[in-house]
Image 1 (cartoon, one colour):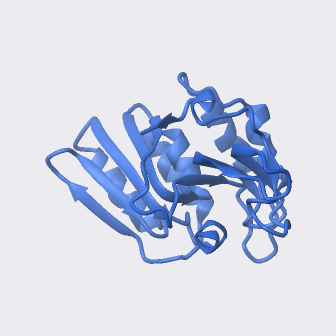
Image 2: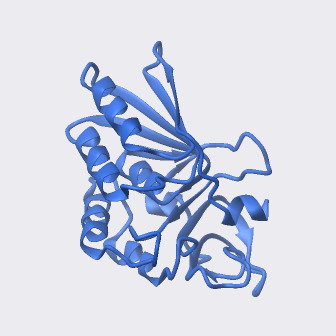
Length: 213
């Protein structure tokens, strides 16, 4: 389980469509091809549901991919769900959707959680601040969103790709304080990410406007 929590396993994107329900499951690494396919699908419908499942985000072109998601969600009511880990670009896209919902995991070995961190250059972890701020402002300004820009700015404590805000479907126990918490703030340099990071025990997914199944 710990390996699952702290290791992003990049894989080819799998986009599975349930035409009857207009439901699309995205698993693995998200690419420009993924978002291009979704935009094409969305042109023919106003009712779309996206399920992100065990996605480490994007392995490159995060800024362009997020611009595609912004275009996809603009003017449409697209519901989003997450099952298993949803990291980086995946978490941003998830939070852009309508009624974002954390689903029950398919296995206890792969708990459902988000990792939100700044858009970074993978080579040296340089933060691309302007683009990240644009995405954070968009998420915070959503009508139903209860996530403030002040809260989202906690992602800037990240020092590498393991750092940022972790949001869990069910609480975890902090290995340093024994506190139970749904939300952990990590630099990514802690001994046991995310278990030894800073806990925010008074915050739940629901208090952030995230639904839980």
